Image (tube, rainbow, N blue to C red; front, side, top):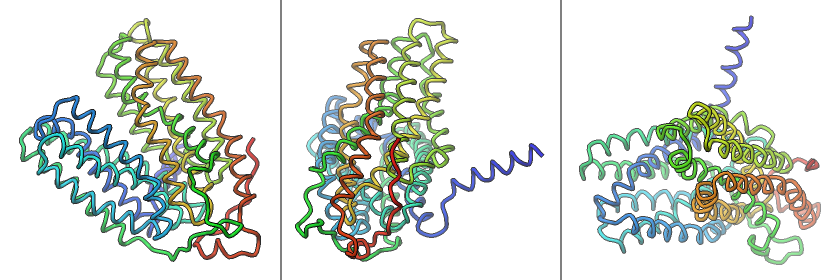
Length: 439
């Protein structure tokens, strides 16, 4: 009897990872294809830039920073295009452009061409995430949106692992032909994404005016939403903690073997693939999403304290604490991802998903720009005190999310069109459930 229940539980868990037939499955297939290409290129790009493009390490770092800034600046304007024409067409354009741009790496030599091409790719890549979120909002019902996003993230990690494995073959061969093949495979993956996007359903859209009939103000002036975007960016510091600070910490401040870094990264990836869908339940409303972000702050603070304890202890204790801390970090990561989707999907005004998704992406962009330096300076540079400061930062960010989300919902309710208008119907929006209180 117990074994039958276990088998049924495993079947239920596995079924939730598989998207429903139709748009959900097509969108998730698109995500897998893109992540395979992303894994191929990202895992081999550093060596490619050094050997084939002929750049120094400093030039690679500077060029990628400039490219990241270019992508960050363009997210909101691209989001406004999505509100005007629908997210499907701009997303298709981004994927088509990426197919051409990635193929262009085979022709680039020198620093100026590298900066130009990397910046154009960054604009398209950075814009593709908020465009996909806006498309998710348009195509799916409020009850489906977070679940589909969670399924896509699980499958993204799976595709990235496959892409990284394929990149390993190119690195092992090490010839120009091998690297060019990897680049062209990435281009082909994005061309396939463009075709998949073209097959997604489209809906007629009408821009939603403000309640008083005037043109709506910029999403950048919605201070509550911008604040939530920045808080989510702070909570997303788990990424540079895992990929930058923790490896340097293990090598320089603990007795644990350096090979443990790969084990921890693999543990994170596998757990996200397995449990992101299950962990996203509860984020179907803005209050529920805000509570998940509060939980993320608590968990990420706990993992920072656990990592700080690994200094100056025996190898076995350090390894055990690092494994435990990474498991806690993954729990916080899962909550942060689901909570972020919930707020970014539920809080924007009707007809303005694209612009608000672009605004929300600014929090992630700032984390990607400043996060690696911040976590390295604190954790690696200051030791246990730095880990404690990081724990306090993420804890306060998580605790601030519920009251700020409640204020954002109240502001949205005040500025919503009066009952009897057909704004929601004309913009393709479905009526959403009445907000529940944030505890």
